[in-house]
Length: 112
Image (cartoon, rainbow, N blue to C red; front, side):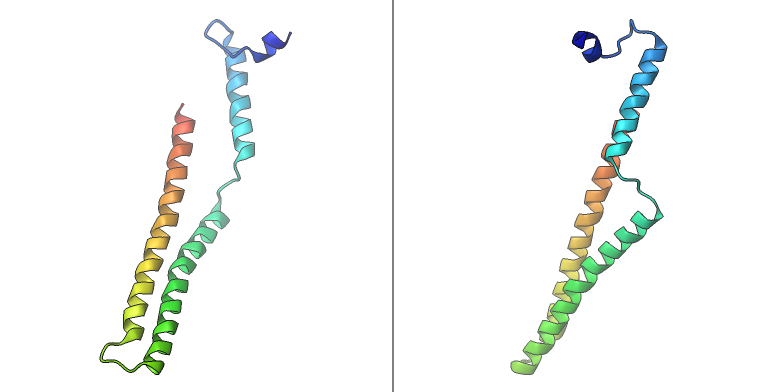
């Protein structure tokens, strides 16, 4: 009896059994994945925004502190602000690329 349960639908099985198997597989896959709705999109925008803002502000704060401690002909604030912005943009790109890869993988799974 265990052999019958482990059997996968094949072309020799009736279309009804193949359809039930496909729907069961899709249902299990949907239960494993959380739904992506408007709130997910807003949360992702917030994550991307904060991943840019935090390094930028930290760079600016460190630059202001360095400018106050060590007078120089170069502005530490401006230099560290730009470096922080660059790191933040790289971080945001990383998050967006990761989500894009996950979306592409989901679409490929659905196409099969």
